[in-house]
Amino acid sequence: MSTATGSPPVPRGGPRPPRVPLRITLVALLLVLVAVALVATGLAATSLLKRYLVQQQDEQLQSSLRGMVEQENYVTACLLGGRQRYVTPNYLACVVPGDEEPVVLSGPRSDDDLPELDAGTVAAISEDPGYGGRPGPGPGGEPGARTVASEDGDTYWRVTGETLPGGLVLVAGGDLDRDDKVIGRLVAIEVVVGLVVLVALGLAGHALVRSSLRPLVAVERTAQAIAAGDLSQRVPAGDGRTEVGRLSQALNGMLARIESAFRAQQRSEEQARASEERMRRFVADASHELRTPLTSIRGFAELYRQGAVGSPEETARLMQRIESEGSRMGVLVEDLLQLARLDQQRPLSLTPVDLAEVADDAVHDARVLQPDRPVTVHLDDSLTEVPVVLGDEARLRQVVGNLVTNALVHTPPTAPVTVSIGEDTSGGGDRVVLRVADEGPGMAPADAARAFERFYRADASRSRVAGGTGLGLSIVAALVAAHGGDVALDTAPGRGSTFTVRLPRSGPDGVPGGVDGQVPAGVDVPSAGDS
Image (cartoon, rainbow, N blue to C red; front, side, top):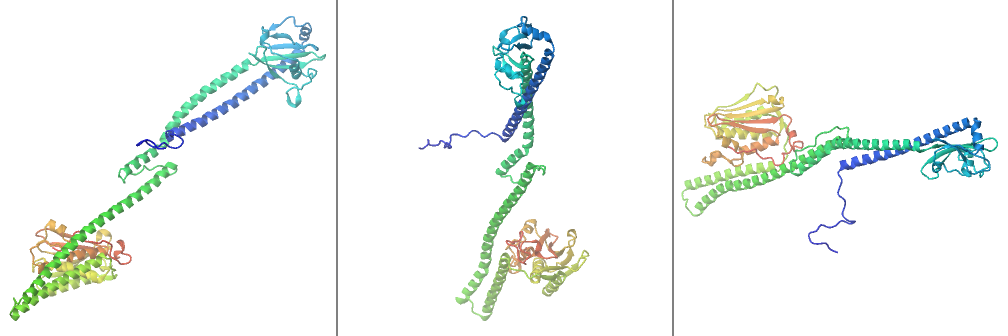
């Protein structure tokens, strides 16, 4: 059997009733339990009170009988047949042996209001077993009081009796309507008080449950905000001694972990996209850079094959140009391989390295290349101990060498270059600071922001011989990051450039892969290239 198109399926067993809110359910359950308790308490109190009133009336009737036995006028009145009945709320009668009808001495005016007594009842409430021989309802079969109805059934009497010498039975009774009125009033009071208690308890319970469940409302709102995309939302912290408080703490911990994982995934995706973009740009730049020397070499070879070069001098010059372009292409390939090794997390050979010694050797090499240029080494007064760091000596020498070479290539021959070593006093002296400063023309802010990008040159019009491959500062940034440090550039047009390298003395333990001596995955320059 199929349903109409578009109509929701009907659940088995018919439609389900609407869900009742939790606070309504809790308050209703509380009221039901309290109502049951009040009813049970009222029934118990009413039953005990009724038993007490009946017992008290039995004692009063017994006491009245004893007093009447001592008065002979009651016996005389009974023997005379009760010619005079006294109208009283209480009932008094006697039963003459051999008669079944009691002689009423006092009681209500109407006979219909009198208790209906038979011989069996009289025998049961008196001490004489001659009337039917049935024992009374007292303990152990002893005679006792009985509750009987009136002849019209509208009134109930509590009657008891006593047998006198000679077989005469005196019967006394009390109307139970007064007790019933007292019990009825008690029941009415219990009902009114119970209703008042239930209403007050319902209001107080609703307020208390609503206050107690308010953190759950905050949880609901937080969940809605998170579902909308705001992972920074948190549940208000509650008392850790309560269930709701512990739930809030657990949810906040879970939300923090979820947000952390989500942010990490976002960063990973962004890094993947950025890495893919860098790779595409890198391949395009590398292809462009390699195409130029290859085109030159191919052009020179084509000239030689066509016989355009005839003299030995021209041939030698042509071969020199081919060799120069091949050397430059070899340097470019070496730099590309170096960056590829860094991207592949090649291991570092970590040993204690004295940066002062490395800087002194780099300055010595620079003086050999340009004897007339003032190149100096300076140890800052901030140094409190030997500037030794845990790192790869060959890579650190490459860092210092590239920075010094960059200063020599991109500044006038007379511009001073200073290599200084100090400590990072703001970090407690656990980082060594190496600075390479020149007094050259400096760089524009736009060029400085891209100084560490691969294949970037601040001046595209420079000759390729002087301009280099555009990878030197990229290699510097990657090697410094692999050692757990950072590199920064401070420059402006007309006031030179200062490259600042900060390296931890303890080595690259603080970066991913630093424990086993590997370069972190995806290490790329912050934004770099030589100027």
